[in-house]
Amino acid sequence: MEINVIGAGLAGCEAAWQAARRGAWVRLFEMKPHKRSAAHKSDNFAELVCSNSLRAAGLGNAVGLLKEEMRRLDSLIMQCADQTRVPAGGALAVDREGFSAAVTEKIKAHPNIEVISEEVTEINPNEYTVVAAGPLVSDALYESIRSITGSEYLHFFDAAAPIVDIDSVDMTKAFRAARYGKGGDDYINCPLSREEYLTFRRELAAAETAEVHGLDGEPDVFEGCMPIEVMAKRGEDTMRFGPMKPVGLTNPYDGSRPYAVVQLRQDNAAGSLYNIVGFQTHLKFGEQRRVFGLIPALKNAEFARYGVMHRNTYINSPDLLDNTYRMRKYEKLYFAGQITGVEGYVESAASGLLAGINAALSALGRERAEFSKKTAIGALACYVSNSGIVNFQPMNVNFGIFEDLGERVKDKKLKAEKFAQRALKEIGDARTFI
Image (cartoon, rainbow, N blue to C red; front, side, top):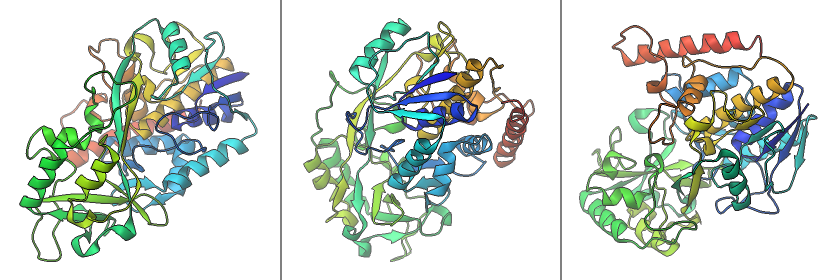
């Protein structure tokens, strides 16, 4: 049985992998290298754009649990992430290029996957298909999807953080440490005094922004990926309670706690490139160089990549999809990735995993796999398909969307453990029939 997968991002590669593992013949369509979106640079698959971090690694966090569920379901994305991991304290971060290359290699080597390098401009809803075109879907495919869904699209604008060359960072004005000592010296911390912070904030808030393709008027930014200059305008201390929070860090030069801190996180295995954590931006490149140069340790920083901003698109999934990411109107058509309204790299891959499994099971005449809200995978799918949601917005996985434990647990750590134990039991049971 043949299944089409449109898009070789994280969701598309995971969907193709899962479907192929179950015996389906997969035709994976990817428009690169002939055509690229505004945010993509590499010819490889599963390109990470906004960050190289897959966020919290432990089971005490919902995204950490989601990753473990995916591992137990033989996730391609988690295999490659674990293979290309770089130091990041309590988070799972990867070598950006190494990760993408590993995914590409495994996809191209699978005997049941045929990679077709061409742009898909029209979808046939009567063929088994997983649409994982990403939030930067091309204009032609956008029109086909809009025609099929019969609904209006929602837009938000996403931003990526800049990356600097480590050799250009002034380490006499920075220090290595992770907050509260978690992870040793995995982060480079660039401290600012109160005066330095206020000057930086003033210049950041007044800096000139770049035009964004597809933007009419002011950008409708998603709260989970807010440009740093937007944050600067929201209040004097907004950044200090966000990416520049100084808590859990002590300046080894004088033993004090900095007024504010800019953190740099390793971006590649060689340790030569670091991204500025939480500094998603759409300032003009010259303004980024000028304003970020006000951070003492980054005065002479050399940028390997400036921050960029682009249009992201997602569908009104609660009205369109069921809890396996299948369209209610068309039984053979699935969606996966950020276009469904899941937010984050891991969540995108998880949606591809579930869509790929079910497209294959359905195509092979087998019973589809549905996961309950007791699992991270199921809770995310149920959120996206909840027709009772008003003003649907993108969502990261979190324990707030899980099924209640049915008991009151005050201790936060113990509560997370109970969520994890319950979820992993259901995942283990599911492996026997999917």
